[in-house]
Length: 64
Image (tube, rainbow, N blue to C red):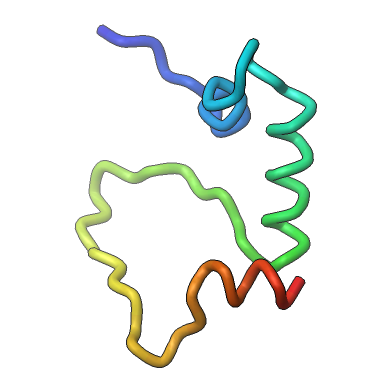
């Protein structure tokens, strides 16, 4: 069975040398922009699809 990683670990491993400080800053920035990291649920089968009138990620990045 594989080891479960925390959201912080998942983000940190995308940076060289597992940069936890950068991961913390990214998580704080996302929370400041209104995003929330939630636990994956085995029973949740809903699929979230983007709506056509929603802003794109670059637009959101400039808004914060």
